[in-house]
Image: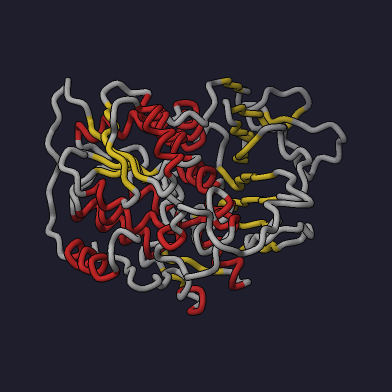
Length: 452
């Protein structure tokens, strides 16, 4: 923020907070191009940029990042001469920007998204939506007040095979769902992300602007560019980074949007020689309405096979199990082994309800191979279509907030070493006041979470 004084910054926040509702954006003609400004271009931002560039009715007119190499790389990819900025508010000031795509570190999402809504822009904002639950709720309020089209970047909401698998599960294809599990497993031992010393930021890198509302700490390379995800000041770690994709899919499959309770255990168990804060080993468990346990397993010091090889989510029903992969899904029917039968060979239940050897399974197996779910282009397409129609996106802000919140609750449970009961309507814990204090966070002055 070196180009703006603290006084000007505070003044801008005050004006933005007092802004009146702006109403729906203009309805675009069929041949009009939707003009998008990009805020954040590194790593995931570059991937999201590719997803938007895949659509000919999208024009990238402005780009913003703290890194000049990122700006140069994006400008070359886009072609033409998109306007370049290092202060996101300059993008929001542009009259020729219909929508923005926010791909910055998690701790910046709330400020940038709310300011974008107040500036009359539709918003695509990357997952996880927020760093704290209270931020996410304020973002929902801003989107509704200013009547903005919003898409949270949980892009599998727009992947056809994921939508199909969720619908099959929700419609009872594998029976009553009693358990679901998701996994993020990779071996980072022994060096992990490394342990660079604190020091001076590289020439041209604005550390103050990177930190933004986060606490003031010395510059450390690992607190920037992607590896910020291993530090709680900027991210919820892998529970929110990968876990939000999986929990969101499970929400779809269950027809639910919030747990009843949550707990978590874990820590830095692998003895890795790095300066991370998040655990390298963690298990989070949620209880959902209707009697379903959901587990997320994060193991970063071992990479042995789990579940079916390549499976990311498994959903277990009374008739079978659905396994979700990065490029498809598989339904495996169950065989029934009642306790009252001492036979060694599992029995299956026939249509007449009787157990016998060789009976037909209750459901048919199914296996689908599809394009990889990493493709974000369908999610961008859905957003652009909704900017035109003013319809709700596949992952509207409320959906993204609820899925992100579930993962944030797991971190709070881990930090408080507690089993927490959750009131989804009030968005408060009912049995732990200390945990409720972690639902929000204090911004570093002069930054403040704006009113919607």
